[in-house]
Amino acid sequence: MSPAINACYVVEIVSPVAFDETVARLVAAIKSAGLLLIAQFDHAAGARVARLEMPPTLVLVYGHPLRGTPIMQSVPVAALDLPLHVLVREDSPTRTIVAFHPIVAMLTAVGVAEDMAQRLEPAQQLIRDALCR
Image (cartoon, rainbow, N blue to C red; front, side, top):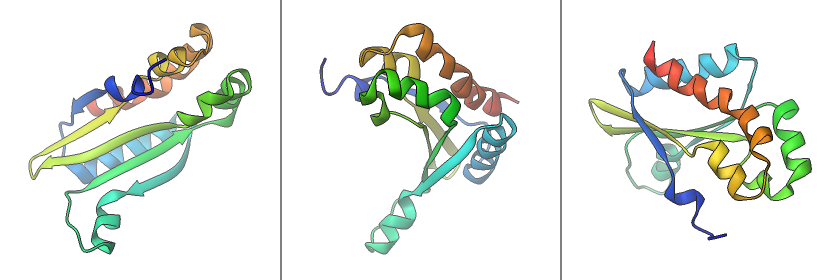
């Protein structure tokens, strides 16, 4: 397996709304699906600490132990890609991009059975759905 296999496959969606509303929609969708919002990494805030500038850039980390744990028990290296991550970034003042690595492709690439990996697809579909409403 190539070390860069996961970095080469990304889904990007242009959000129909501004950055803050995009984040709000995603957080609401994650929580309403009964998933846990585990962490938020605010890269723009980190840049400001270093006296650098970057547009709003946030990674939401989400999932649920009942879904991810069996996968990590089966293939421990899957823990590198779990829980799920979604990147929200302001590409320009009028355009927000949402991006994620397709979890089924990522997990099957490291040896997770496809039927097991497919169990996490609804958690990524909710990201798509939150942007299309």
